[in-house]
Amino acid sequence: MRSYAGGWCLGVGLIVLLSGCQSSGAAQKPVVTQPPATAASPSVSAPSSKPPERAWPGPDNTGVPEGVVLRKSGSMRVTKSGTVLDGVEVTGYITVEADNVTIRNTRVRGTKGWWGILQREGRTGLKVEDSEVFGNGKQRTQFGILNQGKMITVRRVDIHTISNGILTQQGVVEDSYVHDPKYYSGDHTDMIMSTGPPAAGTELIIRNNTVINTLDQTGAIALFQDFGVIKDVTVEGNLLAGGGWSLYAGAGVKGRSSNIKVIDNVFSRRVWPKGGAAGPVSYWDNDGTGNLWRGNTWENGGTVPPG
Image (cartoon, rainbow, N blue to C red; front, side, top):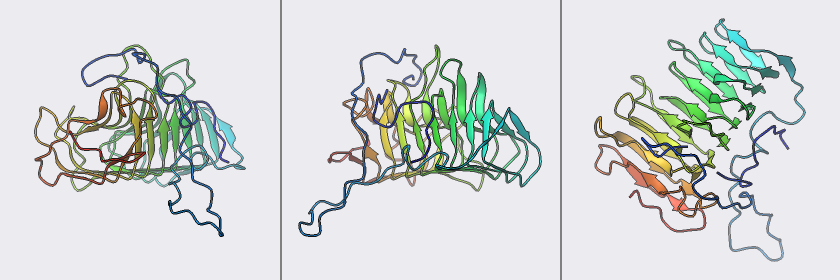
């Protein structure tokens, strides 16, 4: 078991704005169920005809591995390229102002402010692995991980009790558990979010994550055109639930999205009966060049169409 501090476990209390609207996050009480789990191995003498359920990212396989001893620290500013932070418990934030920095086996207990971990503009190559980022639940931590720079990799990270989980335009987010946001007045709350196109020559890949927004707004994964037309994004093999819509798929007033691939994701009704409070997906450009919607299903069976 990996250690887990704060937040609710997956599925226990699965609960911030339809695009352009505000909400209190309490329009109706969410459905509370138990988390997905890997099925027990079938008996040798009586094999099951049903394949084992998929083991999604959750509290047991993300975050700081059990047994890792952490040394305590206050907020940290990293200015040397190639720095590795390993085994740290930070009360505050980590600001990265260098290239190719690695943060692993680290717990960030966010305090009041904008971020738990930030990669500054002009920097690239940040890796965050086997770590946990969360707010204190009393004062807003706006972002778990905020990327203002170029490439970033987020892998096996547990992010919770924040306003927004991850904001990046490019990079890789995989095998992570982003869940249980904390609503504060005026928030626009998303678990994994992009607000514009990736940097030239890059793309955004969101793959094999459990993404649960236990509020009635905004999204689990949200691709918004705040700063330009969305393009070159792959959303593949994720478990998605909650929000106003579980997926905002990249359409917008700035232009037609392109090369958006939404493949083999599983949408769950564990938070809201429709997946999100309003439905599973919105803002899909069906005619966008290179856009692909394939193999997306409900958790208990049935196809999820893009609109």
